[in-house]
Amino acid sequence: MNSKWGNDMFVPMYLFFGGLSGGLFVVAVAADLIGIKLKQFENFSKITAVLCLPVLALAGAFIAFHLGKPERGILFPFFFKNYSSWLVIGGWSVGLAIPLVVSYAAMWHFRVNQTYRRIVGVIGMPLLGFVSFYTGLLLSGAMFVPLWSMKFLPYLFLNSGVLTGLAGSGLVYILYQAFFTQNVSQEAASVSEDSSKIISILGYAILVFIFIELVEIQIFMEYLASNPIKDDNSGLFIAPNGSEFVYEYVTNGPLSTWFWWGIIGLGLTLPLVIGLIELIFEKVIKTYINWVSGFKFASILVGGAILRFVIVWGGDVKAPLTMPP
Image 1 (spheres, rainbow, N blue to C red):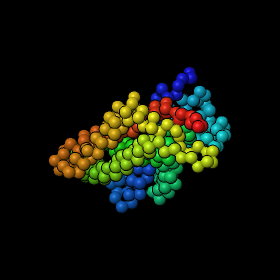
Image 2: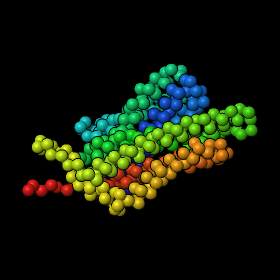
Image 3: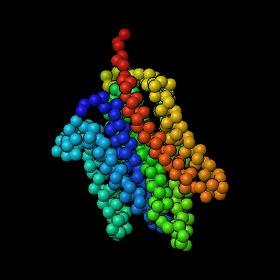
């Protein structure tokens, strides 16, 4: 069963669904808090909280069955004892996140006191945010892979987790409105109006996070292109050698199509253009807003998955040894 782990989908999809689950929980709790003033956000928060459950389960399944002995991942408290390992730290963070995610969704389902529910949500928010952040730490802990930069990758994955969380929650909310609400009553017309308001606010948030991610990627690529080797005579490993090699590998080499067309094009630029069109021509496309927004959300999700694959594949380029003069 052993193979070159970067050649299968288990690790990239774990990174994607792990980041997505963290982003969904953050979005759900944020919407819950907004719902104190804007009641239309309550149903959106409930749907997103429930959606977080299967997504987190998928993340756990992908990483567990990537392991040579899956039972060790499932029974992580008994086997994961090396607390200096990011895999162990991540295992504990995901393990602790599961009861919080289940509790929060159950409180929505059984309509437990909203104050208690929001307290649980606020407690879980930083932990689930860390789950998205840690997916970058997991790779960057290798220290000898230029693309897996501890300086940039965790923040890139955190932002991407929230961005895909916004997109995933928006897409499922549109599908929920389409298949589980009636379109003939006055009450449904009010629901439709509330839905358009939520989709509009999501659109603004998505534009912000797309812009942040584009800036992060630009700075990250400039960092790699400059090959920032520092020697402080301490003997410690400061930055990986070979940064310019991986920059060429990603932007002009075998991964360039996936990087430019998948991440920059499909995952970021296209949703950015669609979002601006939604703002400028809101009245013109009002009839088709769900179709337009749904396509934008799906594009972001596909781009977020491609980002993880490219980052994992980029691990093929290792830091070359620096020969002494």
